[in-house]
Length: 115
Image 1 (cartoon, rainbow, N blue to C red):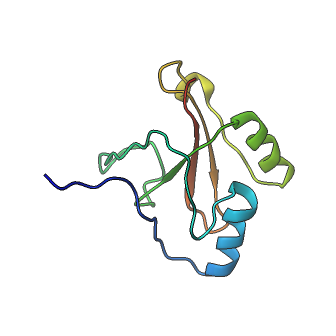
Image 2 (image 1 turned 45 degrees about the horizontal axis):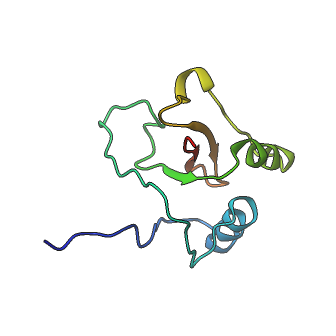
C-alpha cells in the first residue's frame, strides 16, 4: 500500500513572512528548505478541548532538538520566554520538553528525546 514517508513541509500564515522566517532561522536554525536529521516524528490529533496547548490555536509544532539546555540558554539570552515543567512534561520514556512562542504567538514545543 502507498503511504506517507515523512513530513514534506509545514505551512502557516504570517503577518510578516520575511521577519518570521528570519526568526525561525536565527533562533532555531530552521530554513525554508531544511534537511532534517533522521529521528522520530509524532503525528497526533488532540481532543478539541485539550489543554496541552492554547485553545485559540489549531496547531502546535514540535521541534526535535539535540541539546535542550543549551538551546534554552540561547533563547533566554535573546530575550525569548521559555517555559519548562519538568515535573509534568519530562519523563525518562519520552524525554524532555520546553515551550516557546514565535513573534506571532504560534506555540512551539522543543523536545529532546531520551538517549
